[in-house]
Length: 613
Image 1: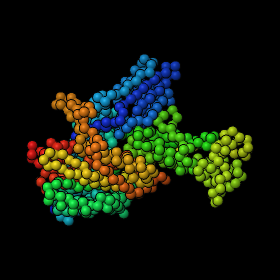
Image 2: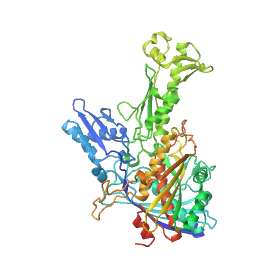
Image 3: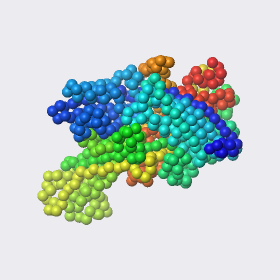
Image 4: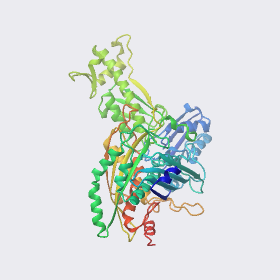
């Protein structure tokens, strides 16, 4: 490291500050616990992202056999990682139910949520970059200090966000020298822990912020500087200096597509013209990587008994309907729609014939739940595997009924058909009727198996990495310090795209949350640890009227770890947006010799950078 910095032609350094913020979910945390003394059983209706993890927690701490604990999670109004933790008030609710032998309910109102929901992102980080005069990055050096509140959150540890920062900073680039150090400090504020895109927005902003500073010092176009240094698309599999292993990424394809999508050269020309008129527009870029589909290597961080695998049971009903029971949960991201699509395609039925059941430890297979962008990639693969096995079993029944060779048959649009002629041979409701009610008409040695369970967990890589590029166009009023968002672009490679509309809206929702971090959201505390703005009047969240058009596009590089090829997409937008917005603001301010480095970039902080206040 020291040799790399010693021989560098250019060394740039900056310290960045990130304000803490919180999830502001659509609905607050909620739990209803009902203890049955006669059965020594506990049923918990819980707004959680990981029902089986909570089943284990309730069992161990309340001394109830795990099989006697049932956690039911209905559709949850947003979670963003906030609801994957164990909260004292929720544990108390379950304990009181056991003590009183009565149902007990707790619902956090908005003020309680601001005070007690997980906070995140409070970092102060110094980052250095060394490069040659030709623009080749030689090394990154990072020193990160992160504040986690008065204690580490059980059971998954508050150190994970900082851990992600030191692992991911510099990730998209091909340098081979990297050093990172992290200090975790305790403070008299609320606890911090996992929140959407854990650590990624910090790592991306640090990386992309210092990359822009280096490009500016060299007088090089920031897009060209990135093109020169991004890991080549044909260099995979690739190991980053921190030890992270990348299966296959597409930085150059996404950069090229982004430049075409936003008409980069035209925007630069327009920017130059407007600057002559005193209009200060900025264009910011951010390359990003995201960890998704965590493998079993993640198990045990903080002692959390949370599964890296997920399961799915698919059952053909006598009426020809298809029931899907899956261990991943619905948090508003469209999990059930995606699983229904995968099941329908795998089995050969139409979507209206599929019913999906999630979030019930009493009926669904054991699994990890919804976190770390794993619903489609892991849960979806389990559904695909179960669906293909069920389809094969259904064709066994059809072959016995029709006295045909199984290889001659297929299932299309709710019927068994002749594979060659596509002629319908047997409706699925008739197949179900025979299998369930008239098995006496089938061969004596034949048994129908019309319920199949399969599990899946990725094994080859610790994470299935995704990648993408974002760009932001802003206009800064240098007299007021206000930032106007004009347009935002995102090109994302999340492997196989199952539902294009859901994928785009996941990106857009994540980008809006990332913009909130960049411009609006910050939990403000008094010196004695009192939260000062814990309400929707004083804590600023991005509103529809302030948001720009967000244009999304995709590159598809399916992972080879699964048959479905899907990677995660739920956190990518949040990961890249703050860095892109920061670079756009600083691009607008560059001719004035100003730079902002403390998020959120409020008008006051922009005016201070301009030395006007």
